[in-house]
Length: 166
Picture 1: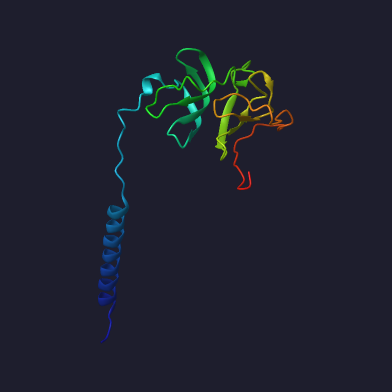
Picture 2: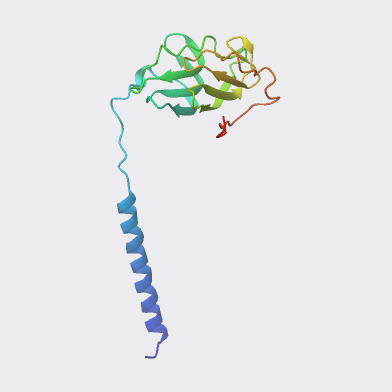
C-alpha cells in the first residue's frame, strides 16, 4: 500500500480524534462531583482569612490565620467542629502573639501521632511565653511546656512537617 500526504493527513486526524475521545473518557471516569456542604456552618466561623487548615482524625478542623472570633476578637488559631461551628473546648489562651502589630500569623501546622500540634508562623510568643515562630500544643490547644520553642527561628517559618520517627 502506498501512502500519500492525503492518506497520512487522514491517519493523523483519526489518531488525534481517538486520543481526544480516550482523554475525554478518562476525564469522565475519574471526575468527582463537587458540591457545597450546606450543613457546614460558616456563619460562626472565622471572619477574615485562613493561611492553613488541618483536619484532625475526629473531623475537627484547625484554622491558622489572622481573623476575628465572633465572641473574642482577634485570633490567630482556632478549631472548628466538623459542622463548622467554633470548638470552644480548644483553648489557646492568648495564642500566638504578641499581637501588637496585628501581623502575627500561623502559616502552617502539623499533627503528631500523639495528637499534639506543631505550629509555625510569624509570632514570638504563645500564650505570652517565648515561642520564636514555632510552638507545640497539647490536643486541647494549651502550650506544651515540655517543648522548648524559645530558641526557634530568626525569621518567619512557613512550613512544618513531622518526621516519621517523631
